[in-house]
Image 1 (cartoon, rainbow, N blue to C red):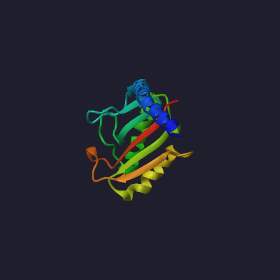
Image 2 (image 1 turned 180 degrees about the vertical axis):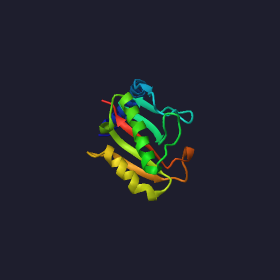
Image 3 (image 1 turned 60 degrees about the horizontal axis):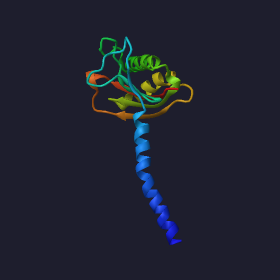
Image 4 (image 1 turned 90 degrees about the vertical axis):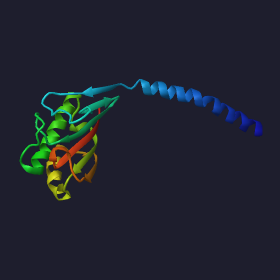
Length: 155
């Protein structure tokens, strides 16, 4: 019994470097590609608007900005709609839609806007909505009221 245990441990220890090498090789095969699209506001810093990594698409937080980078007028409802419109453009550029979104995060400067944002948001995710977090923040760039980021599956 002792010999079997020693042999099992030895085999396990010998296989760890091989497993680590396989994992590293698998990780290097995952492609990473920036997704861009016309009519989407430019990034406000050194980041990509969206990155496809393997079968996942990560869309950076989208403010309710127009193509020139100005926050749209009309309050939080208009900003939420514009944010989702910008996300929609990026999703389509990656060949997917809101049906492929599996996780969203919403950043609000005022939780009193939660119901209004839900009304606009719910129109985009009526069937099998994704997992979601909503977080209150002190401020957003350009004095925005709402910012939304998403993660989607790319078939």
